[in-house]
Length: 332
Image 1 (cartoon, helix red, strand yellow):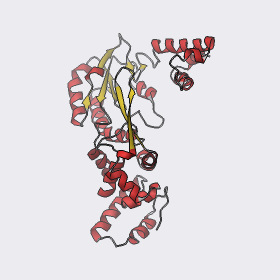
Image 2 (spheres, helix red, strand yellow; image 1 turned 120 degrees about the vertical axis):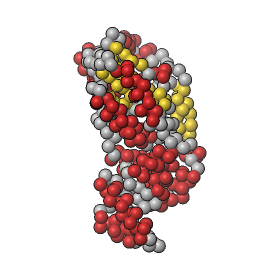
Image 3 (cartoon, one colour; image 1 turned 180 degrees about the horizontal axis):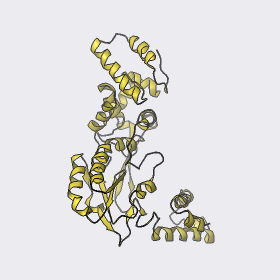
Image 4 (cartoon, helix red, strand yellow; image 1 turned 90 degrees about the horizontal axis):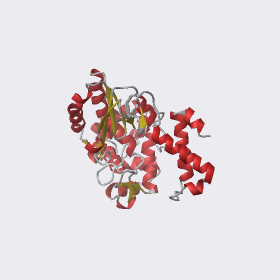
């Protein structure tokens, strides 16, 4: 029985498929595959027998997938991008063929899994604005930055994720290899953001329970954890940090801060003291850019010769419309 890329097997189709395998599966293997199918079916995930089967579903050849799994050096190109505040971020970008396989895994598996109520990054219909809205009007806001978030997620943890949702050991290990580079989650792969959310789900559950019991608010946007509440919040910092470290993550002390109401309480770049705003400095900068473009033209304002200058400006204005529509209207 041949399967198409987007086909989810019915129970009858699975029975036909499993009985057509040559040589026939042992009784133990048959029971294991049936158990796997039922678990995957509950989440509307595609059943996958082995790497050859995965190759067929993703439109690849078995030889290509086995090569990706055994030697990924030619499947990635690595480079560095400058960070806003200095230093560089290493990017491991997958090749076109590898990216096609990863996109299939993302669209047909990872997007079908629930990242929970507390993750706001890389989740449809959530954003830095929904993340910030959780913490409006609180006395204190604690911002915690997880250090080396993607590289902290190892091949072993990714394999464990695929096994936990119902895939057998061979398929889980194969997909884990396809979604990692140098045994870590790579910056640049389309699967990395959603995998990081699903693995960080354990942190979200643990810390949200801790916070709910103490009348604190909790949310996470990628590697940025935010906890807000009353004046008692600082006394819980040590316990909170310990729980994060218990899940295999480290904290970037330089980017971890507590902000009181006497200062700008920023959550994922937005000010949340009384309501969500872009903040005075951001609005001043954006207003100046729009004014200068209207006066001197976009070429004169694009001093760095940024090829995406126009798109970036429209992106900032579009975001302003979402956060502060009245301010955005005043720019016209």
